Image 1 (cartoon, helix red, strand yellow):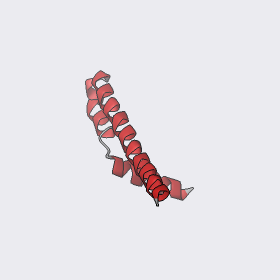
Image 2 (cartoon, one colour):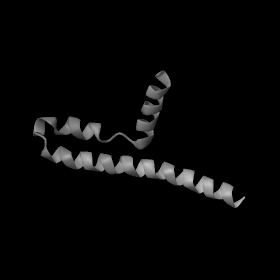
Image 3 (cartoon, one colour):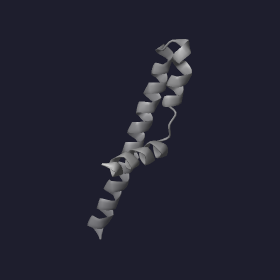
Image 4 (tube, rainbow, N blue to C red):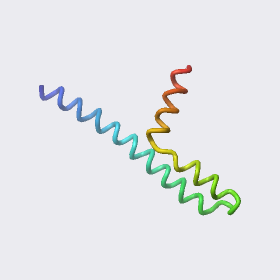
Length: 66
């Protein structure tokens, strides 16, 4: 029973880690938007505001096509 619990904890932490990494990358991307010309700022922000859940759905759809 202890081993099963540990496996569940590891897998749940991996899921949180993926989301945390994605969120951190998106945060850095938004910060980089401050360096682009004003005409490109809105498009840059729009690209970096995709939620992790939306990203994950799109990624899974692409992976399933292969």
